[in-house]
Amino acid sequence: MKTLTVCLFITFFVSGRLSLSAQESKLLLDKPGTFKMVYYGVFNHDDCGFTKAETTANYQKLVALTDVFRRNPVLSSPKGFDCIAMKTSWNCDPKNSYGIPSEIWIQFCSWSLDEGKEVCWTDEPPEWAFEVNRLRTFGAAGFNVTSNQPTASKQGFNMEQWEKAADKVNELFFMPGAKEILGSGLDRYNGDFIIVYNPDRPAYWLHVSIRETFGLLFDYWRQDPNQTSSEMILKMLEKEYARFSEPERDGYAYYGDPGSISRIGSDSRQLPVMRINPAYWNKSLPRSAIQILSFYCQADKNIIKNEMEERLKDNSGYYHLSRFAEALDITIFSGIIDK
Image 1 (cartoon, rainbow, N blue to C red):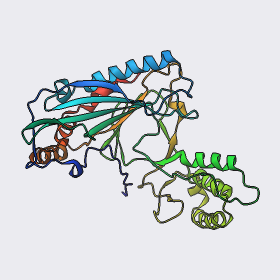
Image 2: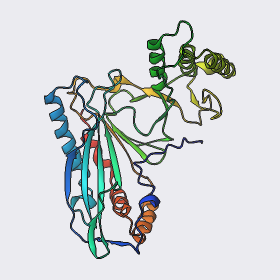
Image 3: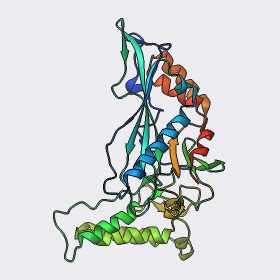
């Protein structure tokens, strides 16, 4: 099966860039560390309609979530690093969201002995992240069409309609790898991406048909303000669409030829095209509730263990992140989902 490669700066599988040389410094593995939670408000919810009471209640939910992952023995009593749990808000999605969206970033600020001095690594330290109440996760690669303000437009061009057409295309994404059901309310994709959810609710993602996918692409390119590119791309899309039979068009869309315009195929062995299912949300719950969360965790513990040994040998601050990942029990998060 082909898989889509998504470059994610949050992943803990890349270590070379920030590795510390043993000749320059040495990790202080036994130095007692600290743990604190801070709010990093890159985005806010001022335009989302959430009340102060809702955001306050949600913050308490996130504190409780922090307490859950602190059950990990590496975090329960930090040694060799200071841990900072940074809570940040995310912009809301009026069409598809309900619960308050946010992230928690776990930073591992390692302590080292550098030229005889104890130094804490606080500049871009290794990180690990949770996404909370986001149905469109950082694990899903989409189509990413744009609707920037055009410098020139064809006759009859309507900017608002073009933006709406772009939004509909951008709601589509490819499933982030082969899916495994690990247990009730616990799915894993591509061997490393975890989604924790309420299994009693409708599916959080829905498959999309070839007919619908091409319909959205056709509409977007018909609205394109550049007459030349609009006509050229539409002809290419029509040629690709003509390859599918009528029954295939009503079937599910999958990842196709990466060199094509649509990137759509009918091979069910490939990654399916999905969209968010707003019906997943239980709107009888308060918006402060945690209804879904996602994060990365490599399934193969041997990979993590080998990586951890290499990072220790290199005196890399990523060693503590590997320790955390190796000790992580993903099943502890199922109880945090509100029902």
